[in-house]
Amino acid sequence: MSVRAVAALAALAWAGLGVARADLPPPPEVSPASLGPVVVRGAATPAHTFAKGLGTAQVFFDAASGSPEVALALLVLKPGAAVAAHVHADSVELLYVLEGQAEMRVGAETLTIGPGDAARIPKGVEHTARVLGKRSLRALQLYMPPGPEQRFKLQR
Image 1 (cartoon, rainbow, N blue to C red):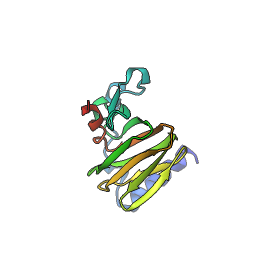
Image 2: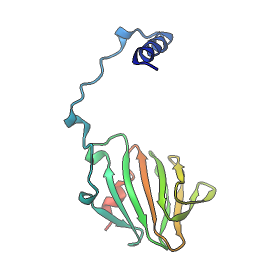
Image 3: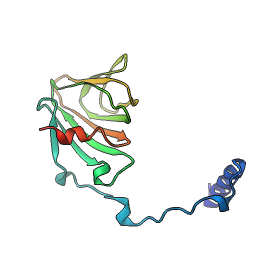
Image 4: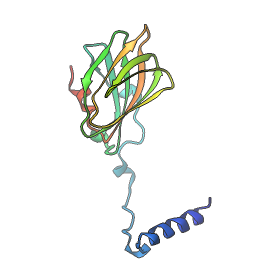
């Protein structure tokens, strides 16, 4: 679809809502400095220890680093690691498993996740996880909006 066609469809949609193009505010000025970091180097990102020393979290993006929309972390949980039951009252959590397996409880549902699997944990739902087998679990974790990842930075 061409840019012109997309613009025409957008104008029709706004017109259907009774909004004239002139009524729309201009887009905000965006400068590279206002975007926050575009690339974060893994070698420069500390790994925060949690789960009784059996887990680490590298927080690449969060509100503190200029990403107010989403937080991104790499989780590594060693065999035998477990994450205690907890709730994120205001954030949705997404996990994408790169390596290893874990048993998760999300609300009343218990499931096993492994490489290539993704899990969505709605805000306000209690959840837990424990690593299965002899391989570490490596997973990408996102929070929308950021906030819950700050607990990794606070643990010693």
